[in-house]
Amino acid sequence: MEEGRVLFVDDEEPLRHAVQQGLELCGHRVTCFATARRAEAQLSRNLYGVLVSDIKMPDMDGFALLRRALEIDPALPVVLVTGHGDVPLAVEAMRTGAYDFIEKPFDTAHLASVVARALEKRRLVLENRALRQELETSGKLEARLVGRSAAMEHLRGQVRALADIDADVLLVGETGSGKEVVARALHDLGARAKGPFVAINCGAVPDELIESELFGHVAGAFTGAQKPRTGKLEFADGGTVLLDEIESMPLGLQVKLLRAIETRSIERLGSNLSVPLDLRFVAASKGDLYAACRDGRFREDLYYRLNVVSLALPPLRERREDIPLLFNHLAREARARYRRDIPELDAGLLTGLMAHDWPGNVRELRNAADRFVLGLGEVVPGADDGGAALGGLGQGPLSERLDAVEKSILTAELRRHGGSLKATYEALGLSRKTLYDKLQRHGLRREDFLVSEEG
Image (tube, rainbow, N blue to C red; front, side, top):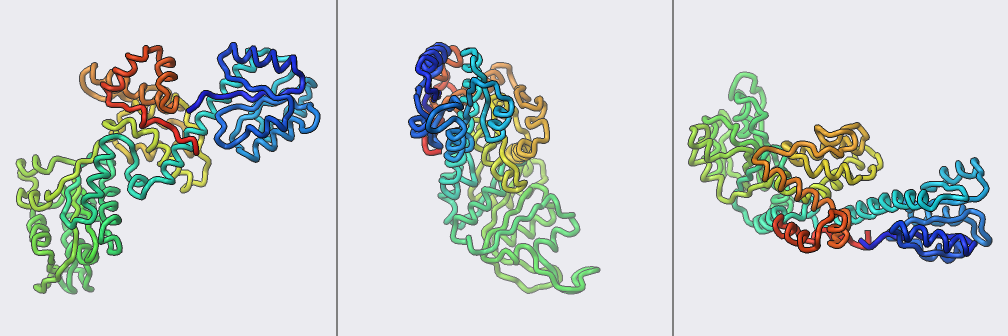
């Protein structure tokens, strides 16, 4: 993102000259205008800048310019200046939507401070828009499996390659890492998209009911079975069935499931008739199934039958660079559910989000996004309300934890500066070579942080 601009409007030439000099000495880039009409021509939704305007001017006054600016972009910060000290005028300006109100004569350092805060707010608005635009214009799969990390790019490539192949798939990933999202993507992007998608949580169904749940039963098959019932596998005929938490399935039922997978047919409880099935099986486990086989908790033959193709879902702590984009995506979903505006995502909260380990992965991050949109206090677990604390830094040697923090800070600064290496190494007090070395060591690329100018 380019350097922020200050558009200063005043019909008094000496004041324009003095303000421009003062703000430039404070590090701001300033363009002055003698009339509001000329300044109006510079306004746009893409402007990374703040408008500072006198109120009392010939032709178009500052209030009219404020209203015009807010018509173009309601989030554009506008600071109004007056020499009349009129408190009701200040109240009216703030109600209309002014970012701030300054009385003449004013201290240039105070104006520079107000402008700096306004530019920071504007930068965050434009960054959030760019992230939203990326999600809205991205393909179907990118909008589901959100992230620009190498791990997510690889996972999306695997999903695309497997979607039209009818092979059974085993998904392995921690709790909340998105196994059902991947399973649905495999279904929706493939030839079975028009068929049913049935998700079965093997760990949530009582042992005494899971066989009937999967295979169905005929009337009188057991006490209480007064009517026949179609099982989940039969209901999913022509589509895809997700066997979530497959490691929780009772050993006795695993034999029957193995036969159903091998023969693509089932027998309802109480019946000897075979019902053919046209199914794709996707199994999901949060643990190591092979270790479960060694421990005698899972059948080895079923493991090999399910493990035709295996996809490993990376935990969130291993793809921290995806957190800002993913959090923004989840906040947008929360906004739609709760009909609330999304607050501004400040740098402190971003640092806290990226430093936290997220043991609950995307599910936990979704809860944090909900709290953020609803304004329910602590967003990052273990941090203060603003999220500025670094949160949990995980387990392991100190060097690994420090590396994780360093990568998080580099990622946050690159994103904050829209991929500008110069702005990043200046903000961090590094040399250009040192920044390059660190980016290479952490596998970070400038291109992944460039912000679209169309946001």
